[in-house]
Length: 304
Image (cartoon, rainbow, N blue to C red; front, side):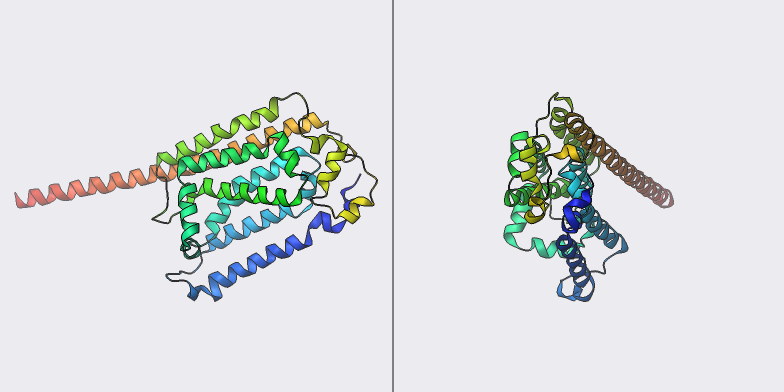
């Protein structure tokens, strides 16, 4: 069956689209017209604007376009959503928001304390790993997909845990937890190792484990998260098999593979960039030391 049977609202989430547009408008107002409200503010850079807009566009594609509807039909699409949301949108958002806005947000004492605690490298790794693993534990995923409120709370909490995960790598605020040099590479590698068991469970299990992707009744209840009740009630559909020829087990295993492959590709790129930056800094420091030694020797020769 075509996805168009679910209607325009389910396919394109117009209210979510308006929310994204509003966020973009507020961003430009804060970074340009109202920038003088922030102490020590600087003009927003093209890099920051590009990353913020990219994060907003990708966020709408993942959670507001037909991709989101497909994510409730195919587990593999759901895992693609999760991978890009947690490993691309989250870091892009951190980079895209200027320092002076982050400083203003973190000037609120309770927020600052929470961020300082949960962005300590060990804690951020553990929090993200636990949240990601819980989100894909069959009993938990099936439970939260049957309640709009729980699904929203859990999704937001998982995204915040991804912000915490990326913060020690990307933030440049001097008084906040940061990693430097090769420690960043170790952090990224450890993150990849920690989420591997959750992906492996999905890949190697030999039976469908998610009722909301295999059971017609549970699937219909879960579809209420993205399809208006009136529209859903007027449709004569029984399950996700009406929209795909892929067996449920293969779709489930493909989802685990997609998540792991996307994560590995992103992490390899990140590690490569970290290593190149570290190498250049080491070379620069070595050159400076060499120049200093030469100057000292010249000075000693002249005085001698």
